[in-house]
Length: 260
Image (cartoon, rainbow, N blue to C red; front, side):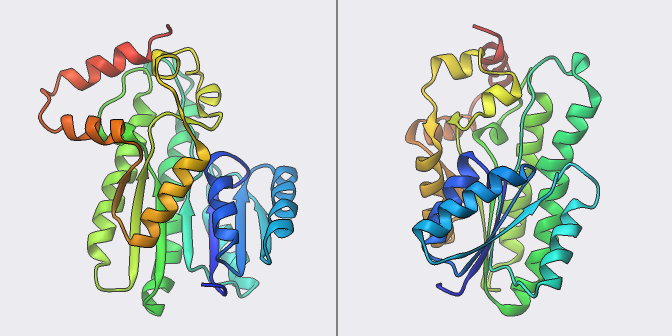
């Protein structure tokens, strides 16, 4: 895969940054997308120092309408073909739905759902035509249940999981695989950004490291796994939800997301 090109969104930190380090060893070109141009250039220098890889950076706010198309068009003009797409960009928001700012929730939907879906549509078509490609959509264990006090975030990740599973089925036999990576609480700075750092979810549970989650996702991608839930406890939890009464999961999440 030394001539392979991978595009990673949300590549300036956390899981996306760790994915970039892993893929730098396999790929000829990496395209890193995030809002912070300065941080992206720091990551580019780091990656080029540890591997013989060409790193391209694209500074885009994926919450802005048309951002995904701009990324696609910029790469097309540079004649860069994407073989691996890692849709990692995303963020959450904590608080009662009726009290939260609409723009914050709208931006969350734009990044977590709209940009992810648009980038997948734009790049998957070429992958199918070439009969080769890999797509990783970073979902969450939040995708498996409703999330009081993080209602929009949990719903957005449920979309990512459902979309990924459906697309993986559609693309069977095309040479293109789709993997939904579902980590639990992870040390990425997510909780602080979401305003959930004081919730029981993050104070009672030890978050996984971004490096461990990315490695697990990388291996799942290489194996063509459709749904990849990181961590044994998370696997057992998602399995148990299948038989739980409908009222129980949101009651548990409600308790977890109240400040400790």
